[in-house]
Length: 136
Image 1 (cartoon, rainbow, N blue to C red):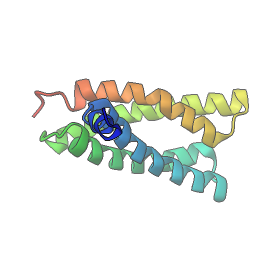
Image 2 (cartoon, helix red, strand yellow):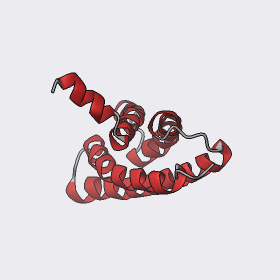
Image 3 (spheres, rainbow, N blue to C red):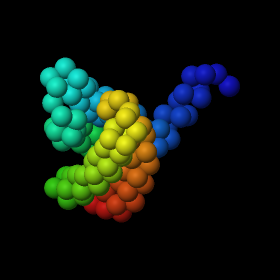
Image 4 (cartoon, rainbow, N blue to C red):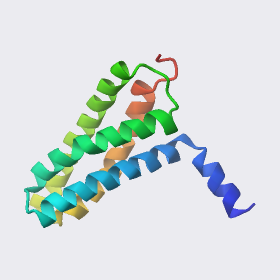
C-alpha cells in the first residue's frame, strides 16, 4: 500500500476531516490570540474572547461544507454550532486559566493543550447534534 493511498483513506474519515477543519480554525484562533497576548500585551482571557468568534466562523464554514457536507438550514445549525463551541470556549478558558494560574504554564502553550482536550467534546457534540444526519 502506497503512502498516498493511506493519506487518501485517512482524509475520507470524518474525524480526520474534522481535525483538519478544526486545525485551520485553531491556527486562526491561536494566531490572533498570540498577536493580541504576546505582541500587543492584551490579557490572555481578553485575547481568548476576541480570537474565539473568528475561529468559530471559520470552523463552521469548513465543518458544514467539508466534514459533514450538510445541506441543513444555516439559521438552525449555526446557533447550535455556536452554543457547542461556546461550551468548548468555556472549557478552554477554564483549562487555560488553571494551567496558567496554578501551574505557571506559558499561556500560548496552555491554549494548545486545552484545544487538544476540547476537540473531543466539540466533535462528538457536533456530530450528534449540529450535523445530525437526519437534520434538515
